[in-house]
Image 1: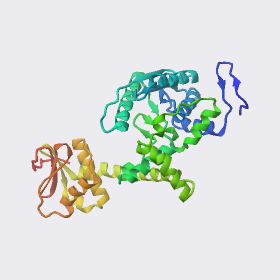
Image 2: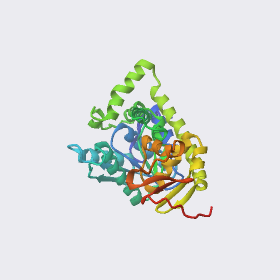
Image 3: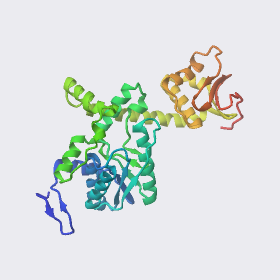
Length: 345
């Protein structure tokens, strides 16, 4: 293990390997693809900066190219300078290419949601431009715990409480098992100066209130390890959710028929299954057929057409769709038609 920082013959000084740096590197190493390019989504904060440093170290050793993309949301004075500072840090770490993207944030769904939409659109575009196999995100175990608590507070289902997946499409989150304090210490140990986003201290945001007020109270009153316990809960729920999703994919073809402007689902098959599976099938059908999500209240209302049907009429669904009980089927359509078409299984 190298002792103190030293000047490498090839260029920049290497930090002394400390436990926080080793933890972050190990987490990144486990997520790298066999070939190709990865991009680090870099804000300049401690989490993404520690991630960038680890990727810059590990990727070349794995035969993978590593770059970075910095998204400037333009929401604060001096944001362009913050973005350029992050980009400069990425270049000094040896990441290449380093892209800076300035985006316009709309007002869809509130400031957090609209910023997220703009950010992911920029990250997607950067990945396509560079041919990156993965975009690495700096979400930590603390972020995961906050997500679970927010889901609990909103009365969300298992899909929401399962938090953020380690890998989702082109996005990977190597640090979901790493505490935020570890990433900050890794930066300090490496001589890197992270940027502290003032939005991360603004109590106007629910996530900030959870971070600054709720989790510390839980830790103080219930003992340490609350964040880890919440993250374990998320992991277990993801496993359950994946099992349900696999069951539904296998089962859905057997119980569905085409219908005019929609799809028909067997009432008998829905009635024969447990409520958890029945309600997931209903949500899955509506999401896949019409591209909209049902709330729990809407899902239960549809399920009553199976379990408590007394001749009640069609139910309006989001996006202009309707669901009607017609004989042996629930018919989901955009026209209100209840005609079930012939279908060869």
